[in-house]
Image (cartoon, rainbow, N blue to C red; front, top):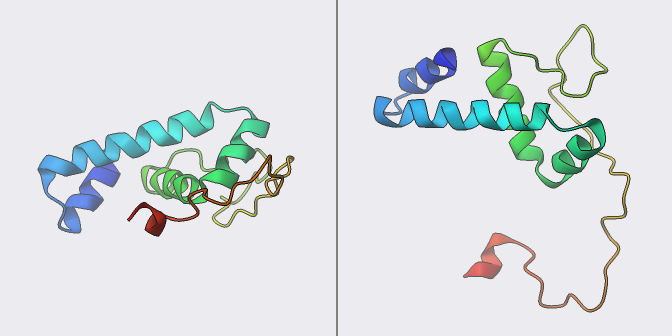
Length: 105
């Protein structure tokens, strides 16, 4: 966690915030690592940026970056997600479902 914290500070983020940000990414990496492969794939499909952030944190901290168990020699930086469930299946009318953050305005 200290390597990432130092990187944040070197990039100009205040030391009063860098520890909390590094801790958050460490917890994210840990939480993703504890998921079984099926749930990890679902989470990754729904939150690809979170998985990318966890992997980038792991690279900097020299932690295990192989969250998928199938890349023994090189870390996987680009992940293609193919969920085992139908994400396009809709139950009922979802016409007023929030589609993006601009819908919150």
